[in-house]
Image (cartoon, rainbow, N blue to C red; front, side, top):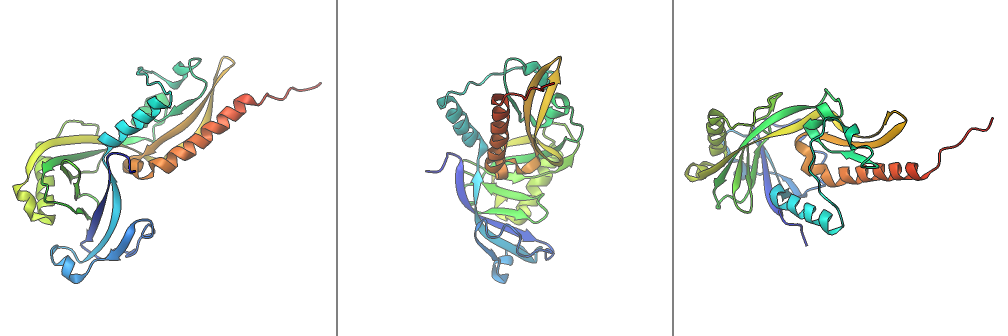
Length: 258
């Protein structure tokens, strides 16, 4: 049984010029990857090449609630606390997994992580069934269980969490070019989020030390816009690093013999 919020969709990705990689490296990961036919491309007169396949879409509002329930049912305890740095968690916790995203600028002293602002619209358009994405990745139409998401933006270094009316109009206009039937869709919500981007995902151990005390930390952040796509495998690797920290705590330190 699939977790709530996960559903299969037909994905259409279209390009205004033929991409250097007509068959991407991930083609065998999705289902039924193929190049679109000339007849299919006639619906998108500004585009000359397309790819179609079936893939999995995850609606995080339902999916994250399911994950939270699993944690609680396994005996996990959720606490909310404001922190100035990771060391404040010592000695309350033996090992810390740092998944604070943009918060790691302060908590982990990482100046390389920065926001990439994304703005989207939610509309009521139940007749839209296919996931349509321009090859640039800036314009996309994502149908979901209760609404259709229209996007988007990729604004580097922008921390503004307030929707911009002009950007919303631009998003709606661009999406209507790809799917003209959206002209009759009703906009229900504008949303803004900040993607935590850094030169590479930080997935590594660090041992904090102060005054003879130590605190093992597993850093697990910086996934940018790909967090949901890679979250399960990334979490498994983080869990492996946590296991190494546990083992290190159980192994007595060697004593010198002089």
